[in-house]
Length: 416
Ligand SMILES: Cc1cc2nc3c(=O)[nH]c(=O)nc-3n(C[C@H](O)[C@H](O)[C@H](O)COP(=O)(O)OP(=O)(O)OC[C@H]3O[C@@H](n4cnc5c(N)ncnc54)[C@H](O)[C@@H]3O)c2cc1C
Image (cartoon, rainbow, N blue to C red):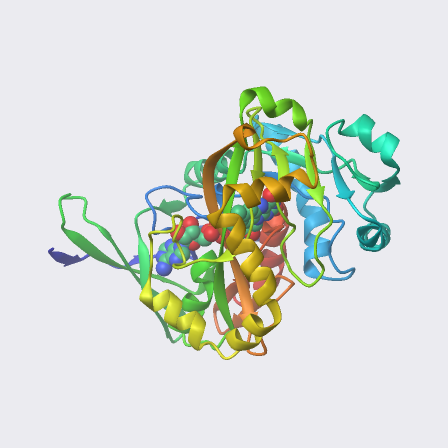
């Protein structure tokens, strides 16, 4: 492999990460703050290659989140922004509504707590009995349901592409194939080194330097590593949680009209295996959540010793394992055994059979873990001299991305 150093390129803002949060932040910095030259650096050959392009495609309305939290505020605002953006750019979406289904009286109590939260968050949601539940989702079996009419589905990868095209069209740079490997604050500028394949092709590889007064890092699964690279102590470790999706066969799509969700376990930040009608008409079921063997380990055969050692050595990991080993074992069972997956799914839709589900894909969530072993619930955005780091942006950050971008743009006044 040969290596070559390119000339330094200057701009007003460098954004690391071409996922929804990075691209939406670039858009907001341009439109709200009128920033002249923005450079987005993305290590993959395309934008939206990780969480933003491998999620459930659900527009959340904001029923679950703690009132007053960033998640509650930015999900509500972001959903409206996202709907307007998709409508303006001809991107497929549909506000089809969803039901959260309680399958036992135990779960009803938790369902009522979600209904209370929805009210506090100003989100429409109605508790419904079994008859109305059957009208909404004939195949779902529950003792009670919560109907959330403003939830929807959307093509998030298409949103990523549209945002990138819009930025490039306005004269900004979206540089793909550029992996940031060093960040250094020098006086009033941040200097960033990125590596990528050389234009000459083959195994040749090129190092480029970028400089700007402001850097915003939106690096998803690598958010903590980028913060440390910049000399910050984020006080948290990103833990990758892998989730497996199945797809319903065309004949079995009749079991789900729109979106069918279980009542989530409040001890856990994930929403549970759910049924999602995608914008192309397919129905996906998933994802479960198991500690991944690499930050980008989409299949079981992909391991990274560095990623695993970092997680296991993190001070909060032992507490996390002690608290959640039962749930961890259950979720691992769902990954390893289709029979168990089908059993879990049948709690919501009893008519589903093993042959109705075909393996489909996986996604990996970036979930921050603090030093006490708590999974950090809210979005976390840290600031230091000339830099902003988005350190925790789990679900519903795809729905909320345009509002997260606006939130960041309003915080940068002190940096530019
Ligand atoms: C399985 C799953 C299901 C989900 N379902 C939903 C849902 O239905 N609705 C919803 O609202 N949210 C959902 N989410 C959450 C949502 O997808 C994420 O919160 C959101 O996409 C985060 O966006 P991001 O831009 O922060 O991260 P990402 O999309 O992961 O983008 C980060 C980018 O940074 C790049 N990067 C990292 N390191 C470097 C580096 N050193 N140099 C250059 N580039 C770098 C990566 O390549 C990546 O493209 C789900 C997530 C998952 C994984």
